[in-house]
Length: 300
Image (cartoon, rainbow, N blue to C red):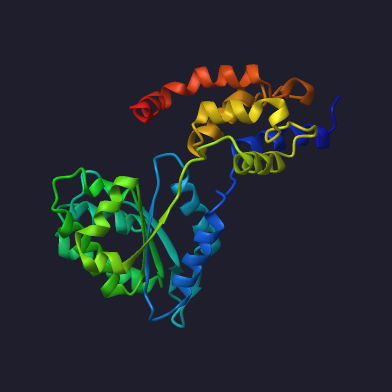
């Protein structure tokens, strides 16, 4: 009978596979810019990050928030306030000012208000909570939703600008490359939002292999996998399958391990969990429907 420590080693590996989370190569440089912005009180500056879908923008934002986790502050009268240095929200689709403030309040941890609240009431409440919870940065993802909604683009961007001006928070707007157009609507936006971009791994090169090596280091498989070793053929296969996008790469690896039985309670043999080109091919066939349209779009 396997000991508890041995059993735990198998379940712990399964957990590591489920929670693969490696920062993009240029993430740290972006984090440093965000840190600089968030720490310079009275010098509010903003970022505009663009990149194709599934390159890892949202995951990068989630990782950054972990650096500034929420905590509870007890005031002199005993009132507990949840301090939230950084909040994340998605721009609604379709984008309306009403839904924008609803999403902002949701990011602040406030339940959705019932009835038919007025836009100004939602705005006032959101601004109050931003001050109350000492928010320093608001990350707004999917700002490209502004472009595909019926709202006037300038009106939407002005609402976002107004929030920053009134609350003195730093904004990080994120969206697809098409969203970069929003920066050009007004000269103020160009000077207000410093542009940064995140791209997919366009080639199966050293940078891509180093990224795969970091994933292997995180997995801590008892034997060498060779994820980033070109001699194994795994990097070439993974790059072709994922098109160099982390949002596809990680699910393929996870699906392959699922096929190898890693997530089953009976999993107790690492020799049966050797990642192979065949396992990756079978995993790709299973999940490619999730992004086949995206692949086709890239070919046109």
